[in-house]
Amino acid sequence: MEQGKVQVYTGDGKGKTTAAVGLAVRAAGNGLNVYFGQFMKHGETGELEAFRALGGRVSAEQFGTGDELSAPDPQRDAQAARHGLACAREAMASGNYDVVILDEANVAEMLGYFAPGALLDAVRERPEGVELVITGRGASDEVMAAADLVTEMREVKHYYRDGVPARRGIEF
Image (tube, rainbow, N blue to C red):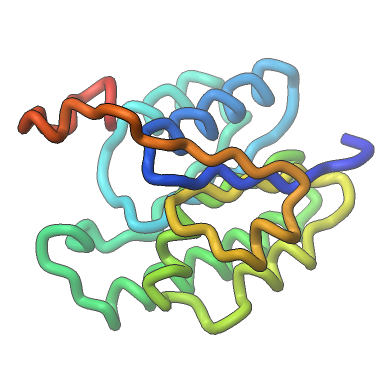
């Protein structure tokens, strides 16, 4: 890619990760190599299975403990997130990837899991030919200002409010 951009998908509505997964599939389908780092997530998800079916064009790693929602351990969760950001920065600088996606990195930053300014530093270090996508609610004003595209998903109505839990194949 001649000139990559920085995209941010944020807001309280559903669809941030879904949009990033769609972009990853589209990029891989066009012969681009994608790194998909998932923060705050751990375990088998539909997107990981889909990525495996793409024949190696998408490399995915998870940097969550699996307990962030049920039994958070801020120290352990922050350690996983910091490790993830270091891996993602390495992937971005490696020259092996055209697209680097940091799924839920905004949330990790909002919770204070990264050193102050670390996510913004990653944005600034992005090589010119790499498309960088950062997802998650609570994107900082600084990250949004540094981005070339910011999309805010806004919840208007959601079935969670009626007690419908996350469904395999739809939400994960």
